[in-house]
Amino acid sequence: MGKRNFKYYIIIAGDNMTKYYDLAKDNKEIAIKKAAHVIKTGGLVLFPTETVYGIGADGLNEKAVKKIFIAKGRAQDNPLILHVSDKNMIEKIARNITNMEKNIIDKFMPGPLTIILKKRKIVPDIVSAGVDTVGIRMPEEEIAKNLIKEAKTPLAAPSANISGKPSGTNIKDIFNELNNKVDIILDNGPTKIGVESTVIRVIRGKIHILRPGKITKEDFEKLNYKVIIDKHILNKFTEEQKVLSPGVKYKHYAPNSKCILIYSKNNNKIVKATKEISKKYKKPLILCTEKNKDNYKNPLIMGETLEEISKNIFTILRKVDNYNPDIVIIEGVKSEGLGLAIMNRLIRACSYNYIEPK
Image (cartoon, rainbow, N blue to C red; front, side, top):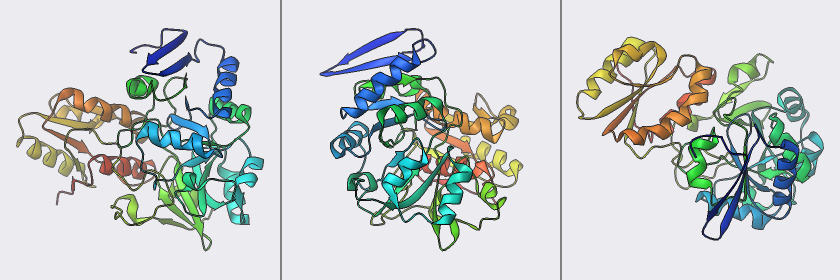
């Protein structure tokens, strides 16, 4: 499917039929009603948010949620986020919400933030991976909000991709791998942000960032919150560790090709190390920032600003294997602001294989 040039599309793959709606052309209200019906009847919908596309199911229907794990090939100790349309829906699935947590919700929702709260019994254990908390997010993207409202239930929705692969930020990138695994696709074009939501938990009056995203440590600190960055953001989890946040434990965002990340606060050292490593391979592929593109032969350019890199990075990581490289060398960015979220995704795409040149 290279182009969004058809109005209504049915894909037949085995016993499954996937209905496709191009929301730039189709009636959005009808498409959302159809998708909501699928949710209500236990099916799966691929839908847009402001961060990445998600695979959504009725988050209170255990059988429906199981279909997400099957579609993605996802480990069941990897929890899901429940997406809600308003604060009333939060109250129905979370308990013992503190004043500080309520203030954070008021300030940052709707938006690209997930907050870990104590769950009510109505939330199936499969959603929370067996722990007594659940991640809750209120998207600001219009299609997502209206879909949840129409379905009248929170949506369990991880990123739209086969587990381990880069998350989907446009339908073109993920169509072939998911078109026979969901009931409806709602295509609303490229997502606005490009990396998944920031995941936080409040512990003893401090915000712990479990997964970085568009909302940053600095954003919280501007409002005088005390913030702690989880040590696993740039480091591995062990197999036996339980996690509260999705997308932090297992291999993720990774191309099939071997990747290495080069990071330094000194840009000249990044360029020098990248050139030296590339000489050791027959067919290297370099992913670089706009300002460094002239230092390399035929690099893939991630972008100029952190916002551009955030929006582009998953699509670029998906392109890598088309070049059949024997090594992929990726330039790192400063781990500040949105840069921390980008570095988190890049270091995991490289399976924690990185060099910090001296």
